[in-house]
Image 1 (tube, one colour):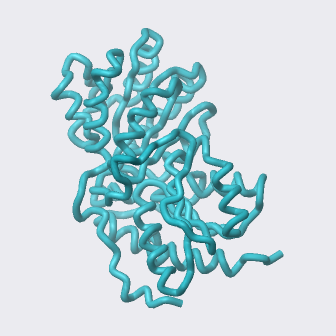
Image 2: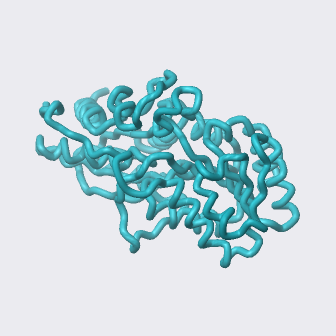
Image 3: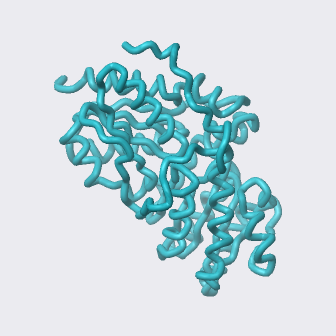
Length: 326
């Protein structure tokens, strides 16, 4: 076992651009390309990044106040009228509108995008009541929904264009805290495709959102012990990249999933379901262990709840130890 006590993780909240600000800027830049684009807000534009769009295009920005269900229902109507609506709020408030997303958007397969900030423990000091740990599971379970959780500001910018080009309902997870830069401008984002961001043949770590940076931390820790961990950025949770997961199963034979979300129903569930019907493999799940969070800084909470690099590295060792067991 490596000496995890000596490991000092990089602070995701210490510097850099946030996913929510990257989202808002990308949305604003896309306005010229998509003349039918309109942005709907539930009185949180300052916290979701859509304040950039409001300032640049006030005539295409619709304020609904604290009425998320009405906002989502109106988005469906706007889509039927030929608009390209993007409805934005905090993830915990997006959960209020699950019924409207299901009945008014997903069932008729309308071209509406729902973008949600402040997910998971990344909501930090806002505390348990604001930390959406169930959103990936809720929206992944709705038929026809595409679910996306980008890892860094570059990927967020590329993902915004991709979801606007896609004709259908999308749930896009953004983020509250500054995100570590992982990609450069040459990065190409594709809906439904994962990306290997670090090569390795001993174990595969599949992560999304802010956990991709922490998975890379874990790979550094494992490398100290001579373990080559493959890190996969699975930014599209649904539809998941089955072909990539099958290749990883054949080439590494063991998995860890890492997400800032409940371990039930999110990325870990999607990966496990895929492996169960293709190449069953030992898998360990990093995420919040079916409990509520608390107030604190995101990196402090990640360490306490087992989402940081050392916890991911320990899970990788457990998964590797299970290789070949019957």
